[in-house]
Image 1 (cartoon, rainbow, N blue to C red):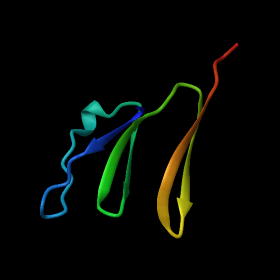
Image 2 (tube, rainbow, N blue to C red; image 1 turned 180 degrees about the horizontal axis):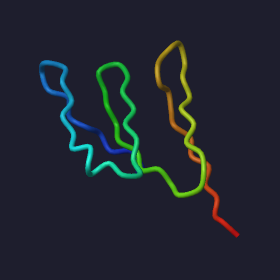
Image 3 (cartoon, rainbow, N blue to C red; image 1 turned 90 degrees about the vertical axis):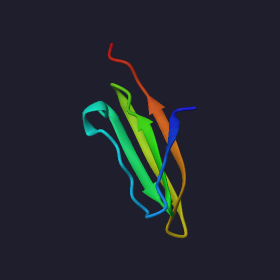
Image 4 (cartoon, helix red, strand yellow; image 1 turned 135 degrees about the vertical axis):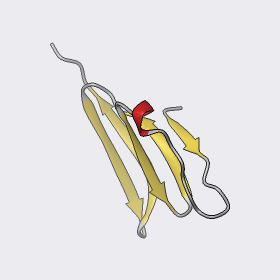
Length: 64
């Protein structure tokens, strides 16, 4: 799985070390946070439904 769930504490706070996030993105919605690894070449599309994140689609490529 490409997405890793991040822990949100009881106060609704998310604590992450941004120095470790090179090449990563964080998606936050509805009290959930997930970390995704971004590829060197490609697209990560966030698909929503009724204003909430439904899925993330990845399309990868490679330099020729």
